[in-house]
Structure formats: C-alpha cells, structure tokens
Length: 398
Image 1 (cartoon, helix red, strand yellow):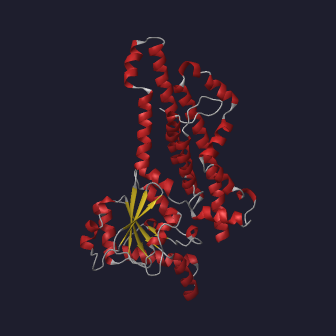
Image 2 (cartoon, helix red, strand yellow):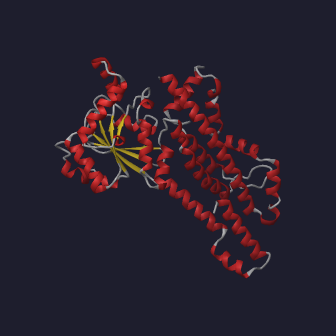
Image 3 (spheres, rainbow, N blue to C red):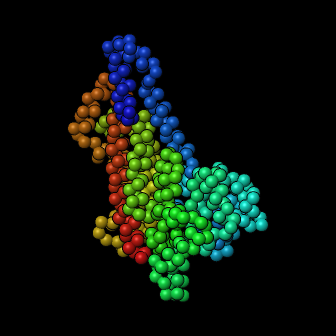
C-alpha cells in the first residue's frame, strides 16, 4: 500500500468511527492511526539515512587505490601522490552512506596473508576490491580465493592505470588499444586462474580516461552484489559514468522521494500560501540536495567542469543554464518559490474540498502529493541534465 493510500485508509476508518459510529472500525482504528503511519515512514527514512555501505579497497602501495576511490566517489576524496604508502586502514566517507577503506596490501612482512583477514577485519565489509597496477601476486590470489570460498563475499579484481598501459603498448610495441587490453586480460587470467573475464576490471582513474574503460561496470557490479537497501544507497551515492548508470538511479530516488515527501508533509512546518497544505520545506530541501548530489549535479568533478565551462562561455545549446537551474533548488527560499507554481487549479479545488471535514490530516495528504510531484519533476529533470552534462564532459575530454 502506498503512503497516500495508507493515509486514506486511516481517514476512512476515522470517518467510520467518528461519523458512522462503526464498532468494527473502532476496533481497527485502535491498531492503526495517522501517528502510526508517520512513525512507520520516519523509521524508513531513518533506516535509509543510517544505512552504511562499507567497501575495502586493498592492494600494494602505488597501485592506484586513492585514484580509484576518487573515481568511485566522482570527486576528489582521497589525496593522490607519487609516494603514497598505506600502512594502516584509512576511511573515506562518500556522501551520506558509503565508506571506502584504503587497506594496506596483503603478503608483505608486516601484513602476511596468515593474519591479514583478521587484522583487516575483512568479514565486516560488504564487498572487497583487490587492486593492482601490474599483476597480482601469490598472496593476492590466496586472498581472492579465501574471500570467495570462505568469507563468501563479493570481491572484484581491478587492474588500474590502463591509460599508461595503452600508451606504453602503443609506443613500445606498436599495439592498438584493443590489443593491449587482450594481452593484459590474458595475463591476468593466467595469473589468477580466474576463468570468467567479467570478474576482471581494467580501469583508468584519470578524469580524461575514466569512461574509456571499466569503471562504470565496476560500480554497477558492486551495487548488484549488495543487499536491497545497501544497493540503493550505493547507486545513489556513487558516481555515474554512463547513461545507463544515470538512469539506474531513478528507481532508488523515486522510492526515497516518497518517504521524504510524506515526512515533509507530516511535519507540516511551512504551509503553502493559498492552501492549508502541510509541508516541511527543510526536509524537502534535504531531499533535493540528495537528488542533485546523486546525479552529480553538485559536489562532483562533472558539476565543477560544467560550472567552470559556463563561466568561460564554453557551453552552448541544451546544456547552457544548468548551473542556474541547480541554483534555484539550492535553498529553502528557492524551493518555496517553486512549490506554489506546481499547484494545478483543478487539483487544488479537489483537495481543498476535503479540508473542512478532516483538516490537518488531509492537508498532510495534499502536502504529500504536492511534494511527491515536486520530487518526481526534479528527478526527471536531473536525469536529463546529468546525461547532457556527462556527454559534454566526455566529448570535451576525449
């Protein structure tokens, strides 16, 4: 049953109880009230906000783990250096729910395989990404087998710095990009004894090269191996480097919008002028920022590129004005100006006819409908603009 349907169900029972004095309805009403609905939705919102996806990024120093972390997040999260040394786990929080943990590599004197799994607390992670910039060593292969067969957790084999490998292959051996990829895949399959090539991800974390390799597939496959709510959280918070990845966000965003929209209406702190409609614009503002961040339209490398390009007058056509469009949703004041414009006269007339009978309960229901429509419109437009932004970004970079 949808949120608005749940409200209507409660209202119907209240009518039966108060107006028709229906004993059966009285009994049912004891078990389900509008407060119950509100508490249920609040608990669902809390569950979403408190859900955390914890992923281990393990590999030897210099293998490109920090760059991979930045690629997954879509922004500069971890510092990248020429002399990076990972001597202890380091957490990087992405958005409101992803924790990527940079782990020291397995198989060194300080971190032998025999104690690595327990020392690094690998059973606590939702997924593990095993990274190399050249080839995997014996301890890496042992780790892969242990995680797969004993821990039974998803693990992903990632070969980084493919841009350098392709360039070296072309310059040193006259190989094409596809030939370099074939050679590397064959070597990794022989090196790891993994028969399924889809378990190997060749990536470059350079902004100009990300979309040329397997970063988008890696992000997608990580999400597909997570349980339901964690899958949604990872899809929401991770970067999208393909049109398919951008469109995959919609289902999660629409479901989240339902919960936040009703929570906004139920809190009812800011009635919309002209209608006695309960809307907490603060909650709606939080949802708005979550949607814009999910689509990479704020706080991302692509968003920075679009903003800077607009300032320099480099953009034209349908992509122009994206920064201005984003800015109108960035504040509560902007959202308050947008909401009344969405109220269609006929809809307002229909809804407002309920108010003399049921007052605030119906006002909250109307608020839910209105804020849901607002969120759906924002999600659809965000998807459209994110796809345009990605295409312009890729075309310019390559």
